[in-house]
Length: 207
Image (cartoon, rainbow, N blue to C red; front, side, top):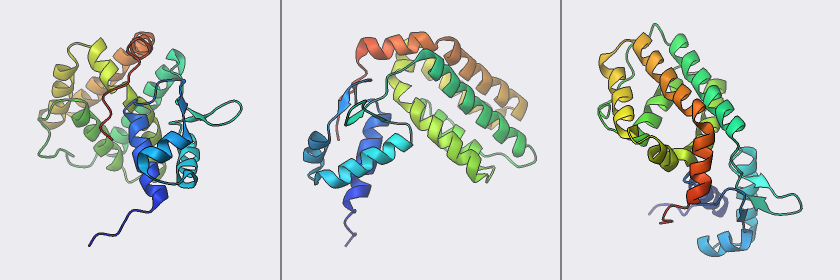
């Protein structure tokens, strides 16, 4: 019989997932009591999870009390894309002498396949500090997933092509494609912010 999850871990995993999926409206309050009621937990583990997620940059402390989903800012968004690109470029440099990192899912299209590719490239370095830095900024960018596919109508084809290069292309081609992928988003950071704000970016919440 599987062991029951401890309340803090349960709250942390659930709220982190919701934050990365953009369930919380940017600038909107994340109410402790409501989250506790949703998870059927006391407020203590929920409060601890919210504080932890502030440390990860997925939530912010409200000016007086409580917690907020962070507002998007075009300049900060560009910087986050730049940091993720730098982490990926560094990873390819550090693993230049290693073999391919492809998996059987290399032909899967979509945002998840690209995230898996990026994560795989960084983890192949074995550099814990690089993995942690990448993980933090990548998590902060995940809430843009749906907005990216609305702004870039060819995003599915772009993702499929990027993942395919890992299989059939050279590392130089892969780096060029990754840089183009990020530069495109950096140049359209303001448009992405407007799209998130326009739609409220509140996907159907199944959790």
